[in-house]
Length: 117
Image (cartoon, rainbow, N blue to C red; front, side, top):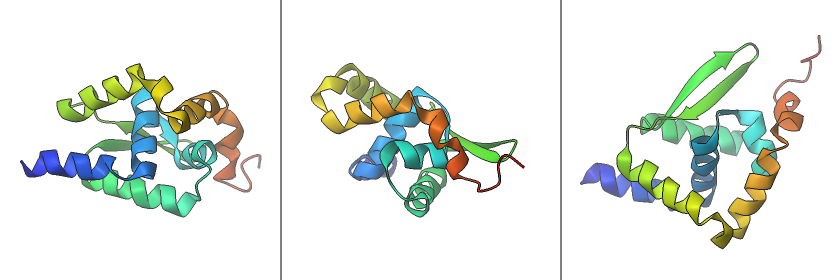
């Protein structure tokens, strides 16, 4: 029962919910998430840390970046996310996030100042 209540606590935070919805759709790094959500990097990192502590996300280093992906073992979470995605038009902020997801590459270099070197 504790795992179930933890999932709903997780989803009750708007930033974490928005992160989870995006990670359900594709792997993203901190700077991409920050750019899409227009949220400072420290806040994104703090929320990703909570998600990692709950064993809901994986992190993987790819060159200079750490990308996060959603673990799909938690069926309650995955089914909830499927419902949210199916009803996305009912959630204006998530629609905005979805449209910004298409431009995620423009946020990639926000993570490192000297990426071109």
